[in-house]
Image (cartoon, rainbow, N blue to C red; front, top):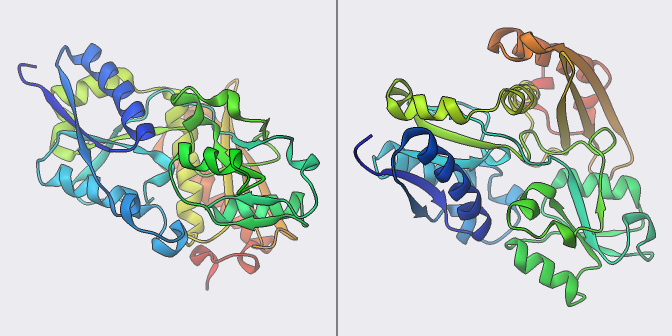
Length: 313
């Protein structure tokens, strides 16, 4: 390619760090220079909880608008922040190698050892329900701000603990500040957590950019993250619905676990499905497996616990 490519990104430290990783990989694959175009999203400037602001789309919309307007050639999203509904004219061009999908606790001691009535910060309804299940005595408090801000609030004693994604801390070199890492089989996280989605205009997928993106795509990351998203899409979970979905590759299969929680954490419905790797890599069969898992969850009463449009008659 003879011109520099423009990569649209949110302007936070985490976003620009992970976008630079993608920029470097694309540059190596295409031989083109890649420059970052920083874009401010509604979620970056608005106050209030993410659920009250509209959930995942508050970070994706401005990036998508810039891409459609030709202000950049491709954009990078944290996949968990990308709505499951397709955006007309745009497609996911690649999902690179995935960072750890686990949640972590940043505190002086593990969750089980926090003092009675500990103040635990999270902006995620799913994490809040999981904390309440594990520690019904804890006071779960909404928290906003970048990683540095949140960690500082723990250091200064405003919170006893906060929950974060291991992926974010890993990418900015601060994973050592995590006190406890939660296992995905007992603490499933957000669909797509730890994965990045590179989104492009449909017409560019067949161009040199599309060829370069295919070179940096990771098969396991793509299969696991898209299976998680398919389950979430089938559930049609509202932005405030406490739902955890995690998948991992296991030999020639992909194992997906989904759990729906009541907001107070006192009840949950869990399902698991093993998908042949070849079917997890194919859109049609993968979606059929996701639909089957969701039917099992709904039959077990998941629709009684959370706002799941997919469970309405």
